[in-house]
Image 1 (cartoon, rainbow, N blue to C red):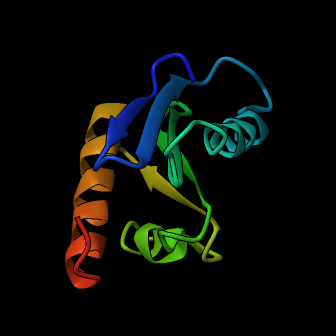
Image 2 (image 1 turned 45 degrees about the vertical axis):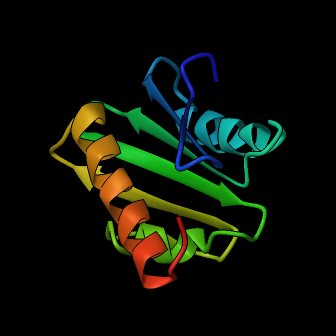
Image 3 (image 1 turned 120 degrees about the horizontal axis):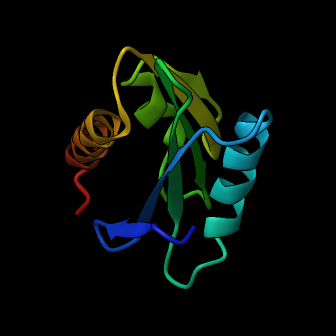
Length: 111
């Protein structure tokens, strides 16, 4: 959470590198915890697992993170979703994530 940034006023995005055998669980827990930050209604944690980047997404309901993750080849539920992006790094994954968020906001006429 230390390197989380705010995007589009209410979205938090954090990145990490794999440093534990249970990173998928840790990433999901961090995404959950980031929703406790004031004014954050959606959170995404991007983690380079060494060859594949995983993204864990959470929402309080204002954003349909399932739709956003589907744009990246993932899926899930409206408030809990994830995606795996093989062959890219965190920087590229965050760029693709921001594009997916922007597309979602445009489709739903939100800024």
